[in-house]
Length: 408
Image 1 (tube, helix red, strand yellow):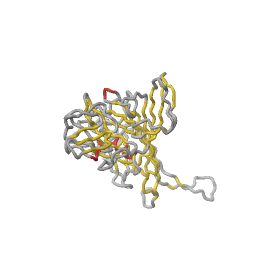
Image 2 (cartoon, rainbow, N blue to C red):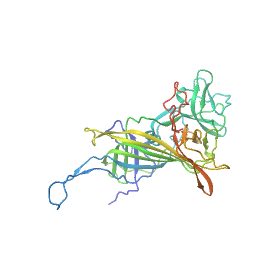
Image 3 (cartoon, helix red, strand yellow):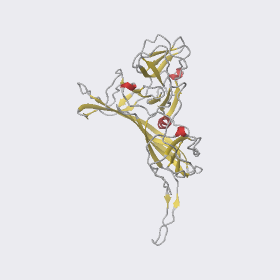
Image 4 (cartoon, rainbow, N blue to C red):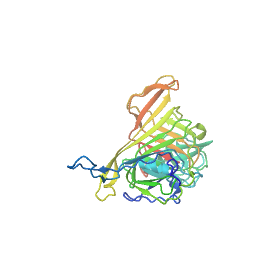
């Protein structure tokens, strides 16, 4: 006989059609929803209800099975690009972006242009699109722009598409002037919002055996951490809570450990990586980390599968930390300081590029001075302040969001 091994298996993630309706994941048909991640076997939650009665203490009281609410899992993975091939249209939503959309509340697909940029590019902040190629719904989203020797990410903050060429202005300057007559690319931008996706997630775990499967449904992302250190791949760790679970069988073989989407490369200049803070387009940093936290309320329902209708986000916060080796003066900053718009880019390959934007960071405590590999370093702990600088007329959904992550 063969035993089911806990370290051999697969994970799939899909959006449901509605709360209370788990998505039926068929491994052979949903390969694109498989996640290249690390996970331990889910520890399933279910209440055990018992009430003591007047009796002798010679046996246990009757136990009634309660609701299955509260199973929690954490997925840890390198971030992936959304396309292994050069894009020929707007970005599509892959699993990494789906998870971040559920962490932050919203996402927006915009920015693709079938035409090359106009000739006569002469600015790193104003990009000239051919007449009719630029669109105001790019405002709030990131675009991947060709520059001499590579690509650079710009976050569109305003536009003028009434003339020829169309002009789109970016928040932080590109690493160089845009290239003449070259192909720009759009993005899938996940952004912080007060709302939440209208439908939950189903996550399916399968071991090495066709009948060793667990389906977790009515899931919501409760926290996520993005870690971006120099010389390392950007990574994502996501924790989800679920209202329901059930066993699934007859899944077939979990298949080979092959994934069609590319892992993102390491954060180096040769991969067009850079960290921008305010007017400084090239910050030297030892570490950069973002933490997303969601406070979830459980809405009760007599007709819900487990006595609950859904999870609902009552609060959502994004905080971060950035460690910078100090040069000359220590540069200690007080709480409330705005160090300037923070933008981290990994722009090397269309379809496998990333950008993180905090347009209005605010320090939440005095910057800490300490040791980093024998050097004095300053650690900034920051939150995301309200942004009002983006133009709003005709803008896209991500306009003025205080935190955004783009897959380009």
